[in-house]
Length: 186
Image 1: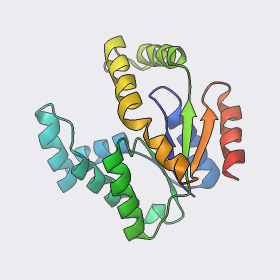
Image 2: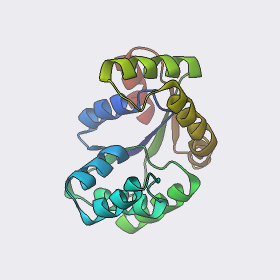
Image 3: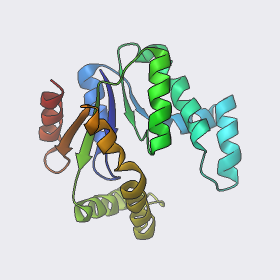
């Protein structure tokens, strides 16, 4: 099973990716985790990313694409994977299509989780308090939700048009949401 898990920040993508990873016995791959691994281990890709981060710039799509492709080519992805946090824009969808074609591993589904903005804001405020995340200020949260709405949400139509989109309400009991996703995936 090869899945994308998509949705705005705070909707529960990481939680559901972890549960789906266990259920299907495939790795849940977070682009944030990939970046942290490459930075921590001073890989060539990590060094390239660090140069942008040090300047306070976003890592360009080309480098992000290379890091994702490198991760998807690892042995543990042979039976599938769940990608969390990628693709984030139309250029990355195109790059992902190309890399999956090159790897001979077509995408099965894009799972879209959704929740009302007030629910997302409340969840992120709670997470910021519990985890002490300095990047979860009300201003930063609002900016990330705005960026998601503008750049990433339109990607759902691409996967819907391809017949690959599975939409699930991200509000409710974690286990119930997980069971609904699995049922919809068949």
